[in-house]
Amino acid sequence: MSISLYELSQTYTQALDFLTSPENECDLQTVLDTIESLDGALDDKMLNVGRFISTIEAEAEAIEAVELRMRNRRQTLENKSAWLRSYLMSAMQSTGHDKLKAPDIALAIHKLPPSVNIVDESLIPESLWRKTITRTVDKQSIKQVGGCPGVVIESKGYRVSIK
Image 1: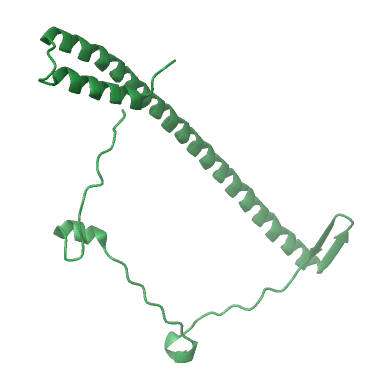
Image 2 (image 1 turned 90 degrees about the vertical axis):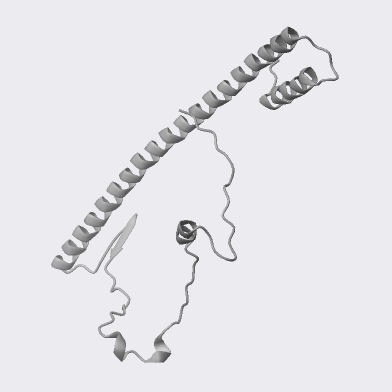
């Protein structure tokens, strides 16, 4: 049965507190031997957790690579489909076929809905404009100037580096 890192950390802290407490009379060699034995187990457990994190991160990178390949494959298929659709429309238009039917498929050429192309914005009446106001805080600038009223710049703590 293996002990968790949390339990091992707690055991280590309790043992360290007990052994180094002035109320307990332990000789120096006992304290050093106990700390060394706990240290080794704690170090091993932390190293194994680090190895597990590395394995998970490597798996995530492999999944990302597969996602990229699949995205590229999807893009290739979409491009091929678009080219074939254009080719089909050209062939149908040049032969005068607006519609074709078979038991399993129906083809038809449809006119696209109208779109608005703006030629000169200054001529558009005010009633046809939509007003939007966008305001965001520039956090990078606040960091560069070292803060301002209404802001607290703080570190989010620590992170574990695994190499």
